[in-house]
Image (cartoon, rainbow, N blue to C red; front, top):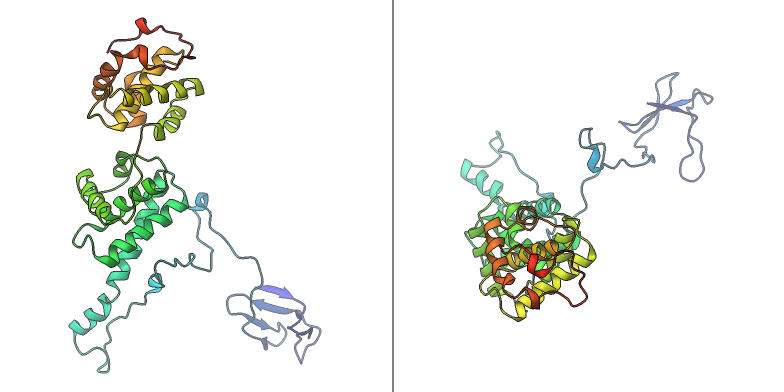
Length: 316
């Protein structure tokens, strides 16, 4: 409780106790009452707390949440997050039987599925540091799939992961399929099936994924210079033009190009170091690198300054 000298009401009136005008009124924040400490008279009720609102930050997870309001309403849910659950009544005027109660209780099942999927999308996106625009786009995809019943019977979380990957492709935010699968609870196979089915129903073309889309992020994680990054991108591009690694995935080609560029520079990285960042096995990098090694003299940019000469590069 707080003590105050009768605060002014709207309109400029001063609130005082009619019996004790000079008394400092006590404000009960919980009840919203103004009380006279001399006689206990409730002078005013339903007083609005004009104090600052509390916000909860991510690093305050250990403390109690003092926020008095809920999360921002999601327009894609259409108020579904405000679902009211009705409990069974023990009176003769309540539900006639348990089956009737079950029907009432399950009436929000479809909206619950949306709420659950949206929460899963937000969690996965947070784990791989995706922006809010991707989260919103993923939710739009999921709602479209949900309303059109394209993937009826499929796991909710697998569809959510597929929608997240689709959003990354559409918005040209480089995230590999393996990265999406790594933060999902479902198998790569199940998510892949969902993605293919969603892809078939899309009206417009889906942006293709290329090794150069990932080059900057992977090179930064490996602490490689802009020169090495540029060389790796050129190696990857030339390898694609010359069709040196047919059938290899863009991640395999990206990893092999980064490994080759780093070996020719002073910032040498092992196949294991590159594989851990890119998400490719050492053996896969080795096999793809061997294909590039045969034509190594055609892959590097003309202005690249070799620390290790082409003939001295590892052959495996």
